[in-house]
Each structure stands twice: as C-alpha cells, then as structure tokens.
Image (cartoon, rainbow, N blue to C red; front, side, top):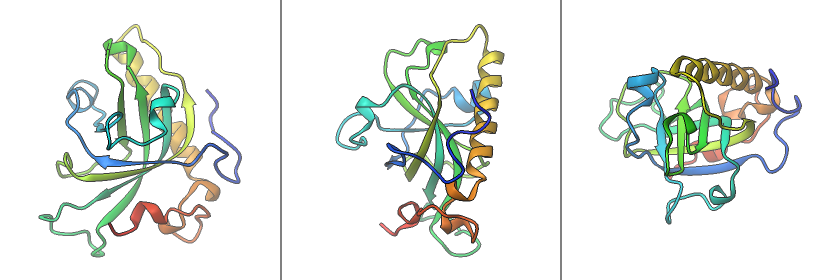
Length: 180
C-alpha cells in the first residue's frame, strides 16, 4: 500500500462518504485480543448508511466524531462533539472467519468512557487496502499499525483536515459536529 492516500488537495469522488449510528456491541476482540479498540456501526437495516451494502470490503480512513454522553462531566470547552482520526474495516475479517459483514471503527485516540449506545459520525475520506487473511494475530496487528500510519500521514495534510480542527484545515467537516 502507498504511504499516502490521494492527492494533497483532498479526497476524490466517491469520497467523502458519510455514516452515522449508535455504537453497537461487537465481537469483543478489538480491545481484548488485539489491543486495538473498535466501535461497531450498523451495516444493515434502517440505521445503515445507504451506500454501505455496495461498498468494497477493506480498510478505509477518515474522521470520526463522538457525542459526549449526557451523564458525562463535559469536555473542557463545553462542546458536545469531539472529532478524531480513524481507520475502519468494512467486511468479513477473514482472519476471524466472520460470516456476517461488519463495520468496525478504530478511533486513533484513547477514549476513557464506554461509548456503546452513543452516536458516532464518520466522514470516510479514502480506501487504504483490501481485507485479507493473516497467518498469525501478530501479522494482523502489524498490518493494522501500518494502516494507522498511512491514515495519520494522509489526514495531516490541510486538504484532508476539517476546518473545525483548526486554521490549517480546508475540508468542510461541519456535519461531524452539527447539533442533532
């Protein structure tokens, strides 16, 4: 896979793709087995994004926003939504032999509360690679680390950064933080 995805100017069609939903309980493997926590979003039913049924299986990247739980103490600045870089897998995760398709989001920041059941929004900006099987869990973990590095480098460019994150950003990320 390339070290950067896309041109410096920003994502190309069909991106960005938008997705939102309440975080579902997943398989419980991300944190416990891999040390890489994930949040699952719906891939079928009325809550699913209209485009996801036809989406190519593989690893994507972009921005995730998460609503602070109402019972929480609040973010320092009083805003409800926070935006962080993310990588995600859409597909069957061949290493685990899944028979059900899933959308598993890894927010590239440690979050210190259980956000299952809370609203998450995604702005998916690009495709990194196809999903594949691995000879070992260590090989899977190493590939996820490379995916995170590719996503981080790609998202650091102003054309890929939401204006809502600072003056450098050129991308309209208002949907990520818009009040409900």
